[in-house]
Length: 500
Image 1 (cartoon, one colour):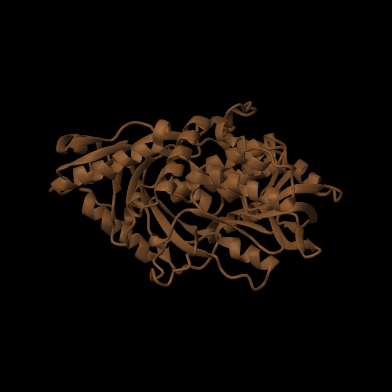
Image 2 (tube, one colour):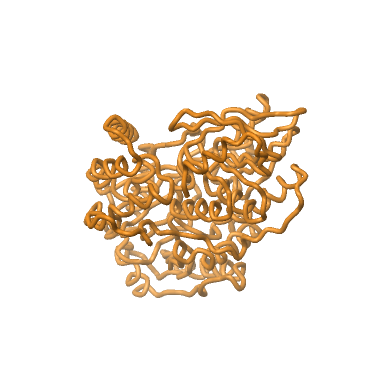
């Protein structure tokens, strides 16, 4: 991906795009890829970096959603499990099977959980992974050595999928670009352009250079997650709210707090969510919460009460319980939940809201895709492009992404090492090298220090202290690649400090 060449394509005012997609998270990138592979002329604009919002702040699971079985959402679970199977096949370098244990502290729990997870396997059909089975007490502790042993009867062993969310976002962007889509980060949509009362494009600004652009498009798709209502109000200032944000946070701990390569799922916590403890990049990831009433923000922060909540629950289930001083990093993400008509009857408890997606088309033709979950991004994109094509009067073409392999450079793969220094690690305990910085800038459109530390590598998400320690070296290498000066370096380091 070459950002300058893509920006140059925006300058041609005679171009009319078939689809203009606003939003560069999982849903927007998936929509751009789907549209481009059908042969539609496609452009995507993201105000920050690809996946900078919710899409890089997930629980890192490609899963059906065990708890949705309890809510009776069989269709959502079935579709999610089948999309999980497709991703395991289409992105094997990015998505892999992960074993889970559900501990049983009552004798009946093994059979109760086993029955539900067997149904989970059946809903996956031919795209399933491996069958659920029971584990005795000793076998459960062998898989998860730090699990609390007192009162443990055994566990239920099942399989789901794990991934690196930010890297999958980059893979979607790279694959869309390979199919001639223009995908641009750090370009903000300012206004929607109308003709005859219908949305026919947008004006936008490159936030890095200040350059303005005007784009004509047959259909405009709003795929901006928690910012969906703000974009809808660019179309109609009186548009009612359709999104109810819910905050979920995660804590990153040393691997010893899990004690193995098997993840743990606690099926019910005090707020009705499940609790996950997952091995990820040599660390243990603990989450998540479901906090309603949070403000919409591109960079939400964990609340003290949320951190306490996770630590308290971890102490109930793990022998060696983590404390605040054990937290290597923490992060928060906002779920763009579709607000149900009976939200008040549910007491505003977002844990009870569906994770399914919904499509909305305004009177002027703005197509908004809201809700959903990472696992079903491809199906969401398929539905969105189908609807947008109808709105725009485009020739209907079939979706081809169900069996489409996603391209992943995996950082520095294929890079010719022009400098032996590039092979050096950014931190001795983590896998990232200086070469990953160079590759992120040259091939994956990284433009800021945060793009590199948070998403092309995952240093900010794995170890904040390690990220700060290597920041000066990283930003100077980026400056060499991008042709930036000392003022830019200082501004990047200042932004990193202020973001903490």
